[in-house]
Image 1 (cartoon, rainbow, N blue to C red):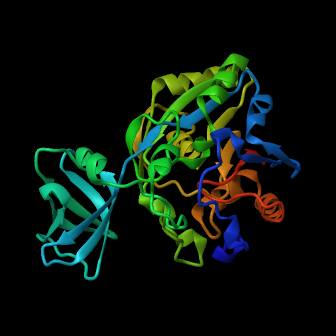
Image 2 (image 1 turned 135 degrees about the horizontal axis):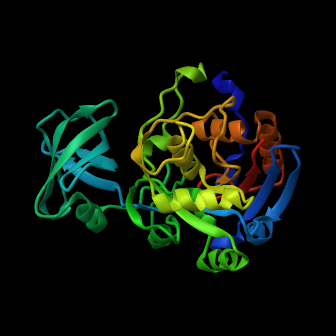
Length: 341
């Protein structure tokens, strides 16, 4: 497979810069991967589309305010984007500066907060923050919401609230699991009333989710690692749903990757770990039967994933349809419900 196999033309004005007025006000493109049929619906139709025996698996990661502005001890401006919090005082981060900082150099932030560059790991730097506050405390107080690079405005209070799912619980993500942004409490309550079970996994989405594929031979791409946790309760909820004839509905590619990673041995197992699972057409899915997702960037690993799930040609037709029908794209855009091919 070549990278060009996963390209498409997108008018820039279709990239959503702000969320819909209400979470559930988004449009929903329903694609049946078995037949290729496409339907234009509203996200509120999800109550009608899911069956009482289905289990909805959400990612309960919480987006941290991972972007910090600072200065090197030589005076140059620095932008830090935390990729992962390692412990109380250490983090992996992307550091943008006029010259790459060397080990031992200091980065100064507001409020006398200081971080030492410990070393470099590929494109990420290990930083050690000094002071009584934890890394998460520093980010909460001084950081800003790390909006994706294709959203052009500076984050504001609306972004702080809306670039976060209503069920976000475990802090650690530096990008939102955006398929979940369409759910509000009322819709989740309506699904529960219908009998749909909701279960949670945690996968901390990293900044690497926006890293481009830099090789034309797709098989040579190496995925960034992301930490996930799957509880025994969620494994049991999935088993009960399958036994009752229900379907596993993943809310987002992050939930799907966590579930498929945890089932790599052939059996879904509870536990924690890191996943570099790279899903491309030809992958055999073990767990997930339906996927709720947003529209993804051209030439991205996420576009490859949905092509594997619903069929590459089906996805090409669906994206052409979405462009023609003026759907809104990417993180703040509209949604898709995909039936597995």
